[in-house]
Image (cartoon, rainbow, N blue to C red; front, top):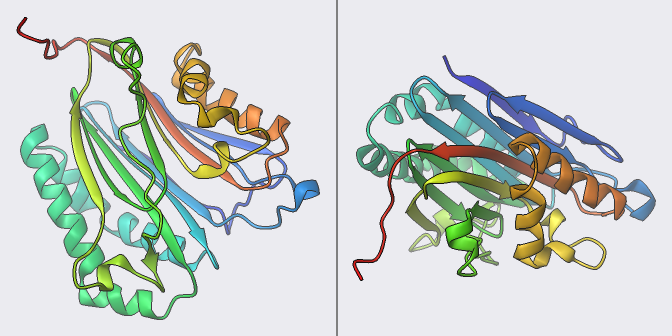
Length: 266
């Protein structure tokens, strides 16, 4: 059975407070921003689906501007494809990820959704992530961020799997309406042992003195927590205590991976 959660900031803005919803081993957390610092709306959105029996998780975070219309439109589009996406993720990782990326491109680039976007006010960034067994896949338009935290990687200075890309959106101004859509995607093999997977919008990176622009500080806050939910709560508490003005949305989960991973031959 798949546990699922979909959230839209325009409906549940969570201004001045932290909200966390647990979905099996994963957690979706929201802080809508500090009203004393000027926050008055939340244009983020997120979804989190997990099927522990079938060995997969699918998550997305969205960060809109201009209005929340674009975040709502993309969230509704993804939620409407729940059955199709769930069916794709029942496959082994390689065919599942290939089919999922093709399906997302068809959804987002289709003529019917292009017409929806043309009538919107504002646009959104989108980051989708799927985990199937010991493999991770992502699809990103814009400046949301994905981190994979593990000592093997952190010891070599690797924290993020994505780079934040500016001037990419879906909505009124739309990458999928261009002659060649600009987006990024990729795959990564999890390392043995504890892997923490974190998706987030930029509110956690741009508050106060910007401590979490240093990925080592973000990693320590999450990886040393007692659970994935604990890591999510620690990040949210830091932004709230720092009176961050911008909304912050985070999805995180922890995988204890028993599979071997690649090592250099010499």
